[in-house]
Length: 266
Image (cartoon, rainbow, N blue to C red; front, side, top):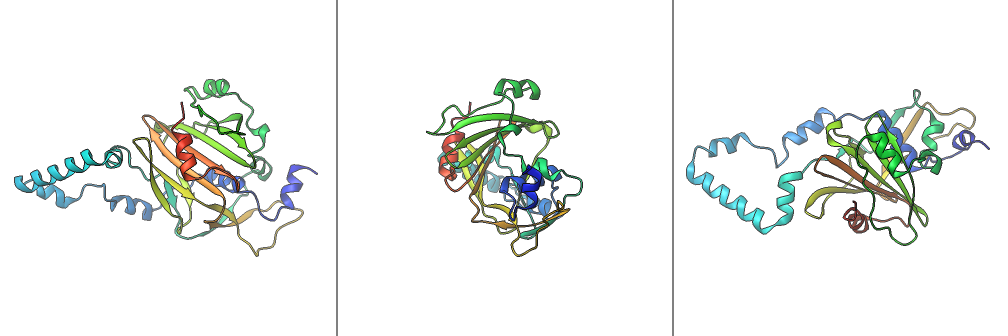
């Protein structure tokens, strides 16, 4: 049985298939997303500009901010590095047209053959130093890497007992790449050392109750956000690079373990 025919008879595509599909479609932030950014608490308000004309109020504000930064290291990290890494959708269900994509290639995304390069080889392809996990948990091994030239992203695939772990790295100058999530997804603010990052549990799955095609690859994919899906994503940036750790599988590392792993990246 070929991989393509295996895909055609699969009721629920694996989470990696759907995520790679969304990445290739390159979702763009909506006006609602930019409105949220404009209303974010770290944005400068016009009212604050008025306070600058009032010496006493400004002095009080500066004192409060300095006190908060000195007392709380997470606030210090947030002041420097806070970025919205995830792109919430307006709802928890999406219909995608995949006519221009190759279902077989997408379905094979997590196979070892799709990660054929060594760290040295993808560093050469990417033109920058590719970071790796300095310390691996028992049973985890590095399978290999791939380079996605469109987004200038390197992806390393690690595998453990019943789970996959992906370490992605890309230069910030290549542009922000958003991770699509459902409207009900919960984004948690976390700290990787003194760097602020974000964490989300869950992922997109094929919507249940819909008929599947047995003989012809589908041209549309109906998906919904599942917060119980064993997929865990951690995103942050350091200096000129953006990083992502994503694990998939029932026994895969979750928030605390991903943060620990992120701190070993060298």
